[in-house]
Amino acid sequence: MSEHHVIVGDGIAGATCAVTIRKNSDDARITVITNEEEPLYNRVKIKDFAKGKTEEQKVMMHDLDFYEKSDIELMLGTTVVKVEDERKVVVLENGSELKYDKLCYAAGGTPRRLGLQGGDAEGIHTFWKLSDARRIREHAQQSKSGVAIGAGLLGIDIAVVFALNDVDTKYVMRGNRWWREGLSKAGSEIVERGLADLGVECVFFETPKRFLTEGGKVAGLETESGKVIDCDIAGVAVGLNFNLAPVQDSNIKTGEGILTDSYLRTSVPDVWAAGDITQYFDVIQDRINMNGSWVSAKAQGEAAGLNMAGIETEFRHVDTYNINHFPFMVGSVGSIYGDQDAERKYSETEYRRLLFKQGRLNGAVLIGNIAIQAQLKKIIEAKVECYHLAEKLLEPKWKAEDVLEELGATEKAQTA
Ligand SMILES: Cc1cc2nc3c(=O)[nH]c(=O)nc-3n(C[C@H](O)[C@H](O)[C@H](O)COP(=O)(O)OP(=O)(O)OC[C@H]3O[C@@H](n4cnc5c(N)ncnc54)[C@H](O)[C@@H]3O)c2cc1C
Image (cartoon, rainbow, N blue to C red; front, side, top):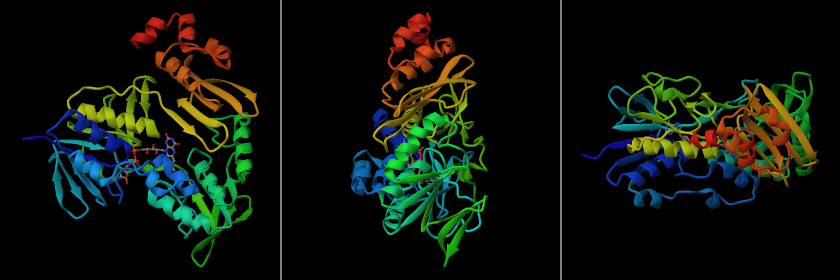
């Protein structure tokens, strides 16, 4: 009898896992379960939809026909409440059970809310699902003033979405700059100018204290310093809680997410994890790591799918993340953490920051022309000590092959 592969989550990780199993196994029975109402859509592009720049159908990736033709059973609007690994079943919200032979848990995360007074008022949005994007777009179109909170990669999306819907937008940050883990003030200033050109005003050194409300709706934000910013729409992006509740009573080991080895195997036989929720052993960075990006989730879905289909595949990945709100790109490659860094500002729209760990290139943040991302990725993958070449790596253009040759590391790079 054919094996039953069950996948929790129809985001890019879960959907890619299902498609990969099908490509490698004609007779596997595959079931994908999602608590969303739509089949796979492009989560990255929901910001373009919310901005009013694209229509909903352009965001969709799979239609129901796709699943039928691929012989993948899709259960929409269905929540998995429990994984019982000893009995190899997933329990659904309505109490029914689904038996699996192999399971991929790709349930992603849910945006955290700010636990502040007034934080549940109508008009305070988090941004993760297409349904959120619909609500935000509709509300922003009717709003005059907005507050965005969260000085990171998702907070900036909310601020820009508000501004492009002609909302007078204040972007509140606790520190002196945007994305303080990734950028120095010099780098942030480029982004700040880009935001100002789109109509977003950055407000620094302000910590949200409480939301002001009128008739249950958001009316403003008061900060710890006593500043009051009026608004009729607000958006909060302060990180994700990973959707671990269904596995909490199982033998699947968890940390912040689901713990796996570099093959995305969990602590329980026949159970894999993929996507944002996965806390995996990263063989490039030699540490336990988590990524929150589209390319990583897709690559993990593929690796998990191959492993589930019996094709042993290690997940080796240097992550990338790019933002295209401005006339210049903002991007990262690898990790934004290190014990040493080096940076250069080339012009009013060009900047590069390199992060090194124990002498090796660990990652970089780039603003402007980010074509060098591909070369940096090769150096990161090579896992070679190169901090002494930081100035060279800050040169506008170079080829990874030349740098690796200079380091005498070409052979090592090929075998790493
Ligand atoms: C607005 C926005 C902009 C972004 N921009 C970028 C970008 O520019 N670049 C980039 O690389 N990344 C970006 N990302 C992040 C990227 O989209 C995610 O990293 C990626 O989509 C994660 O995919 P995933 O499949 O792991 O998880 P998800 O896409 O979160 O999918 C998990 C799915 O599982 C479902 N689920 C959860 N629990 C259950 C349950 N118990 N039962 C059934 N179903 C369940 C969820 O509803 C969800 O559909 C952005 C994200 C957002 C929201």
